[in-house]
Length: 327
Ligand code: NDP
Image (tube, rainbow, N blue to C red; front, side):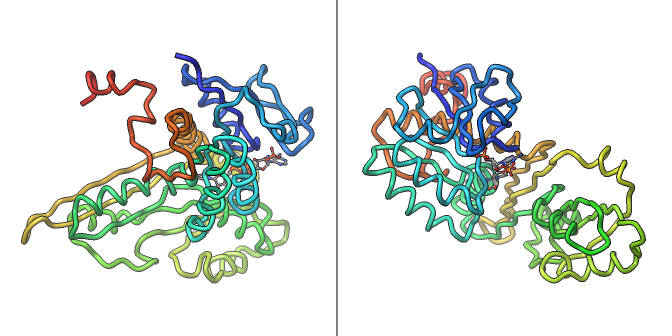
């Protein structure tokens, strides 16, 4: 078997994760990293990983089977995914749920005439959580679906926190409510308000001369971000922030709770506990890159989501091996 040759587009947290994940998958090889920055200014985790300019992709390279796109969802992927799908098979982690249909259409329109295969919006949410929501709903026609996130570092809420006057630094963790999860697991099918589902935990370094109570009030009353939740604020030192809060943990639960006949409860639960959100998301992208390469080889082109891809295509094992050893 020949290796699947991968290029990484964009080298941030996710890009570094993909580089590491490819090293753990012997059926895949890394061609290099492609960046908008000057290549010589980008230091990779692996000593021998080549770094190229984005312009090196323009002509269409025949040494690449799939590009894993690691840009941000806000502004990078809406441009990069359709542009690159016009020349390469791609995988992206576009996570702006409301705009996924629009993104799918733009990528599909680029991929079809080019004969490429483009897997969009994979990762864990969207991605594995989306799959598990659909499994639950297809299998238990009567019931409710719950998604809880955390304990996890929220980039958006941490940014909002750091913009509050008097805050010198800080991070925000989203926590699922244990009480809510227990009620759902028990098959109660509760109606849960925003406040009942998640709580928010802030660790803040105060700026010199700032008043703790004023800062705390400004945070917990911030509309949309913190006001709809029970939010706690704990003040820490800059050293503690540096020492205890550098990781990017995340995870969560998808629970489908239903009944198959009067009074017969059935509960399905899928959960993730992640010490590194980007490293895990990257691992998912790499498995879907394998699927994209295989689909393209079989002539199955155009944009795809996790719903369109058979699970066996994610595995390095062949269909024969899977039938013999894993059913
Ligand atoms: P980063 O901000 O770390 O990187 C995004 C881009 O910014 C990179 O591709 C890179 O492009 C550029 N960049 C990175 N570091 C620098 C730097 N030091 N200076 C200048 N530019 C830099 O984002 P993440 O990797 O953390 O996340 C990317 C996306 O992943 C998120 O926007 C989100 O959409 C998605 N995601 C999806 C998940 C899912 O479950 N579906 C889960 C987690 C994330 P370049 O090299 O071209 O400069």
